[in-house]
Length: 247
Figure 1 (tube, one colour):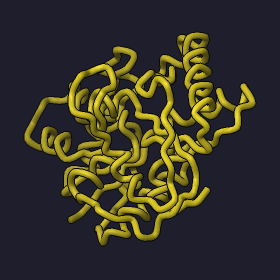
Figure 2 (figure 1 turned 90 degrees about the horizontal axis):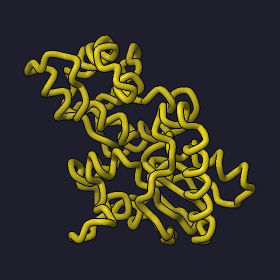
Figure 3 (figure 1 turned 120 degrees about the vertical axis):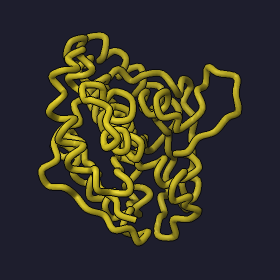
Figure 4 (figure 1 turned 180 degrees about the vertical axis):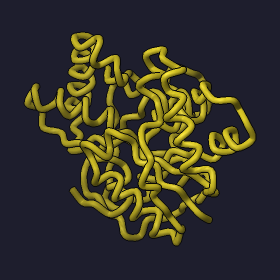
């Protein structure tokens, strides 16, 4: 199995350790992982602001970079949702549709494709609250939505439940958006900040030592809000926990 690793722009710029943890984690399972060095943005910022045609070049480059792999994996639900659902500027050729179909967010790849049943190297002796990015939750269905009356499931919790010493704590409004929303946090700064503060306070009340998610963008926003409010919880990407980080 050949896997192409896609590392989102904000991970590369602000949290390169998440990309490194993702690579190491995938390699632990004996996968042949490659990182195309000329990869760039997936085009999500342009699409989010309605500029679909402006994302054409980034979509074309993404397809060119990743078409040869069996799977494309990224530590980001929002970027994977962009590829799977919003790659609309391009003509939907067989090559384009194939790339879109085989692009997976890290959690769903481990859970649905590899069907991982153990992380023997992982131990995280802390109380942990889980945040599901809106795109990962509602676009990729990595967990059940709390407002729907259907069978409860959570792929991130299934994986984290295999980590020794990790204790889950629940927040009051688990599926409420944190307010990041990519360009939303730029154009609606006040609303975005208040939503992030509400989220951070909810997490603090839960008694969590750490908050984890499969999206660094949300964690970055929430961590900034928590620091400004002088709250005590820390933030860590799920790839780092599953790869064996203890703090």
